[in-house]
Image (cartoon, rainbow, N blue to C red; front, side, top):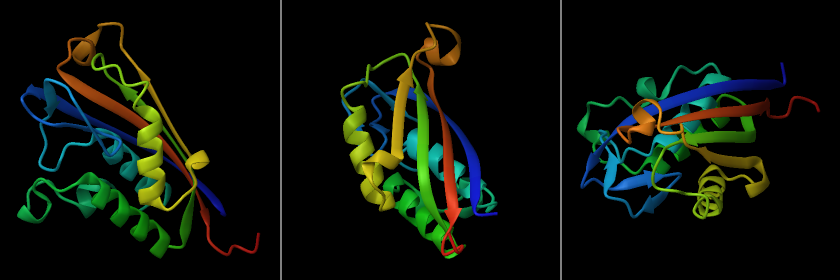
Length: 163
């Protein structure tokens, strides 16, 4: 099976006065994600999608949210380690597609920077990374600005599969 697809989903609650990291970029906002790491919900969902595609469990298995080793860790490090795990299992990234669900802040002007950062961390071309954003029209926990949710899909392919 040369191609595989994985799905990732992550949610973090928001709280006043915390830094907000999305897609490897720190945004200026009054709220940030409550998390053991830096709370970059985008990179966490992408890690889960990649690990799922390779049938290698999930981000919590590889990077648990209780040891001091991962307290406050930059999620770009987690993404880089995830890429190493996926490559060590014989796969490479074909593409990533992520949807960020948040009411505020508006991030359309930051998305190109996210793509650059994510592609660089994963060692892939920017054309292999898609990031989109949407609101929930003020519905649910996202609409009330209580949290952020991200859906991600990753396609990977077997390295040296004779193709």
